[in-house]
Length: 310
Image (cartoon, rainbow, N blue to C red):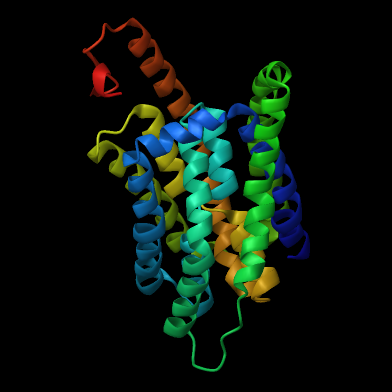
């Protein structure tokens, strides 16, 4: 499993760091200000990601996990912020990137407390006392800062310094992000085949249930509160696509327990298929919504909302 672990803990973070740099290139400070000026979508996304998703993780762990290690791995996955992969899918789909990055930034900060707390609770719930490994909040902070805040900040700085060149690079980086995501599906599946054969059957139910139910939950929250289509797509990715790189780093590097990594491995295969399928559907949905918005007169209904409220 060593090659698989290296792929998830070393290769994926490098590629997604570049994707986050691309996100920074596509953002302006006014985009972030606009998100906080209308905090409805941000609040909904944070509640879903920080509270509802870990609750779902614990529920599935209790109901479906076949072993304590799988149960803890499922909770770790659910407690990780959406992060890099969710941002990359939102970027590739042309969803609300500013909302996606804002949710990642805030959930990453909250996870400095929530992730160790939920991991500790999971270890307490599923393992005997005295066997719990330690988890460093400072290590989590360093990883999150390096993989999210730093590349986005660099990208925004480059755009501020060289706006015309940055604008020309955005579509190139977007295309590269899409290619990279396809690469993850192909290579991740191939190098994981042996481990998947060994562990797929006993972890598929909990991994697939978490992925499908979390995506449904994200989509339903956006629809329930009548968010704009780009916001719905972004929140679906943020809640429904977990940070495999961070979950892998915690399981393999910080907790030093490969068994916690098993559910992440199986989840990663399922997630890539469902997220990629939703991404292509969302691109068409967003294109139709944009066309309808451009053609509709002020005050008419587009994308399920009056234009005046958008």
